[in-house]
Amino acid sequence: MIDFSILFDHWDMYLEGFWNTVQASLLALVGSFVLGTLFAIFRISPIRPLNWIGTAYVEFVRNIPLILVVFLFFVGLPAMGILLAPFVAGTLGLTVYTAAFIAETIRAGILAVPKGQMEAARSSGLTYGQAMRYIILPQAIKVVIPPMGNQFINLVKNSSVLGVIAGLDLMYFGDLISADTFVTFDVYIFVAIFYLILTLPLSMLVSYWERRLAGSR
Amino acid sequence: MDFIGAYAPSHLTFLLEGFWLTLQVAFLAIVFSFAIAIVVGVLRYANIPGVSQALATVVELIRNLPLLLIIFFTYFALPEVGIKLDKFYAAVLALVIFEAAMLSEIVRSGLKSVEKGQIEAARSSGLTYVQTLWHIILPQALRRMVPPIVSQFISLLKDTSLAVVIALPELMNHAQIINGRNVNYVIPTFLLVAVMYFVVNYALSIVSKRLENKHA
Image 1: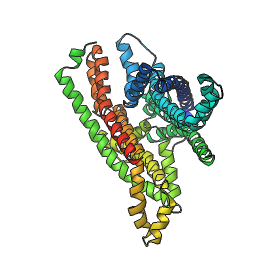
Image 2 (image 1 turned 120 degrees about the horizontal axis):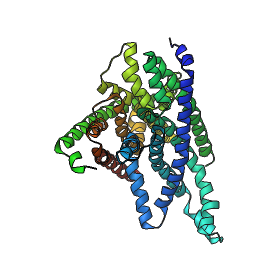
Image 3 (image 1 turned 90 degrees about the vertical axis):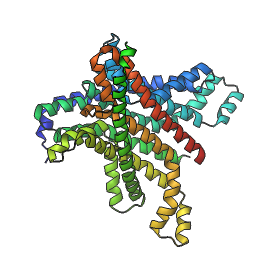
């Protein structure tokens, strides 16, 4: 049977780890949304060099492991004399990595809006910027929300790499508690439950939204 | 930064050795997780009362956990209940559990995307349900599933690097060992490692795009 005293005795540690996981995920979500939008715009922009930068970033980052990106911030930067706290290095790594996936999601959303929409908007006198803001983006966002939700779930799960670099997240405190109690199975069951508290509702929300979207077509 | 020292021949062969193990882990995990995913995906699609729901719950739970946690489970927690695996098999098992759950979702939605008329036509020409599934539905669905499956394989290959936490001597682990020798090796080594992962994964993604265009 699962020993609940582990949970009660280490409640503070679990909670602190949980809270830091939430923080890292939210910070990285905001950061990667900004960065990802920027690179998505680069990728669809008619300016060649921007296009090239956007493509290079997305293709390179998407094809290397997250832990390598995190290590670049945590081990690579100190090697060049820039020291970051593990939590900061980890969150930056998560941001840079997730931005590549979010850029693709946003790009796909914008491209999913039929061309006629832009043409109609332009011919009724809107500027390119206005058409983008009032016609294209509102429609794109509807398509983008479910995959963005999936990216956020991935982000929460991926934030566990902070545990590898002592980033004070749920995974890290799980290790700590397990080293403290010499128990592993039960300790990690509770860690799993804390992750599921975050990811399961998100995942249900995403599938609800997907069904609604499928219904509206 | 010391590129010459970092790229000494002994280091390069050491990294390649690590990469070879990475590829072995990935290959085994791909084979087993794909086989399990097809069985699970078909069982869920077939809507067998009880079985489909139970599988759905298990898949949903696994999909929503970090892979890193599953690696900790297979390596550190399983011995507590009497199942002792070495690093290699603990890593393979964790990857198989996680990726099979992810892939089974792809298989299921691929099967669902085949038009109902196909089943009706097959059944009315006298095929049994299982024959219909095997000869009519699965081949069409598999073709549509190729792009998402290949991107899942790319994820899997990247995810093998998480086994660095149990000190499996794969590519990341070997890179870290080299980095430990001299701080000036860190950036050059990481660059080379990134390129190694990138080359294989990018090649896979190009294959996937080709296949996508072919079947579109």
